[in-house]
Length: 623
Image 1: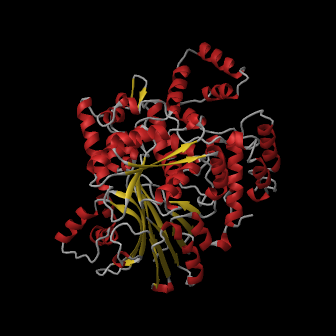
Image 2: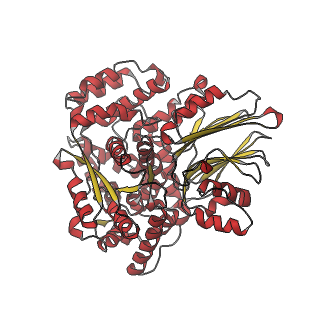
Image 3: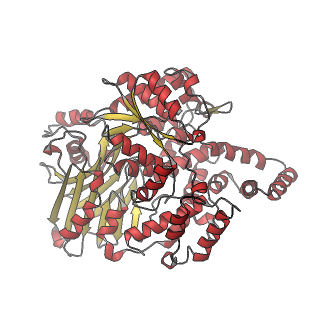
């Protein structure tokens, strides 16, 4: 995988090569094998700079060096990702008379843009974020893959400047003199632990949404944002009416092809294996289509109640993979946490980033590419919160008197968790419940949940699917928000911190489109989640090896903050919080610490968010 960076200034001010190269070095971990820059001056003294850091995966020669220029049009590309069907597209372009000098997909993307313009995107199957400087049209074209597997940030000062980068730290480095905290975006961060949609914590900096493009016209200084793929389109289609056996075969056919495409590589390749349904299905198919023995990697915990490693090992033994595992003790994690924080270019408070980072580090010591099972939970309703939303929906449908009795009973409970259910029951509809139940306890923080970006995304889904079930609304909202802005951010930053490319076959757009039309009773069937995926896995691995409750990557921060991590916690959070412009106050932080240390409540998630934000602010130069 790679890092990309670029800047266009319309003011005539030169792009400082010193500042630009310093910003590019912020992306060196994403591409340690090669780097390059391109500078040009356009009409009216417009200045263009493009940069690239390369992790060589296909065609390891210098023929794949970037930024790459088209010999036909002079267009220049800087690109991060993989287009897995590039060989098929290349054959189409050869028939059109195009000639190629390399064996990499970068040259194919550039030629496809030359041939089809923006319509080239409909031909691509893969994960990507790229920028093309169109010399002929005098435009900069930015694009991000359909689901948002690869990141793309941009800075826009209207009619004067557009910059972009794979990570926010590089963009911040490019505009260090103009860094300003976007304090109102912190509400979403504290509510959910990440920045949803186009939000970032910095003024004038945005994320390009999944399935979107930007065209920046140098003549006018106009920025045009367009959507070329929308999952709601497929969620709105009627459910398939085929029998279960037919749909199961279609699922396997698409997934088989998606995995086979993701085995194309000129470097060593393996897979993450947690022992759960999704990763086990990916590895089982890999082991059948790969020409070499598969390497698998899992992580374990010395705390037995949260350890899935022995189960993953049994599946690896059954499939005959070359299996590697790493066991984490509290001491190991404590030493690692402070370092892991630096891998994330924006505040990110999902604590599962810690084991994911350690897993990526171990995996990179053996292979350069790893397949992951991410995406199955959102597509086949695997999260327990979907069940909770459905339960709330049933209670809300009770007659008014009964509903009031249940609400009063919940409010009178001493348990905060039960009182929280009463708050959720006050929701007017499904999407309110889906959003509310994910909001963490916001002690001393004045946040209007209705103003949150996640709420707006949820409302859009709810309005588009007015007759949908609560589970469908929740899952589609997660596909558009939680998946790209939490799960895939975690995977990308953790893997790229060690120059490891992570590939996600469940998020092949053909599989996503198919899954959105699978009947609901084949996603959750008689209380069983991910039913159709389970049926597929049962063809490859005996059920006794994998049918069990999901545990996931849980970190006991609530205990460690009261024990070995307490001195570090108190030290990091000791300063004032004036720089957050009133969003966080010292009294709110002190109250969260007090209530957690006294065991009055578990505030570890909120304290972790405070620590992540503070560490990021220090690192990026806002404090």
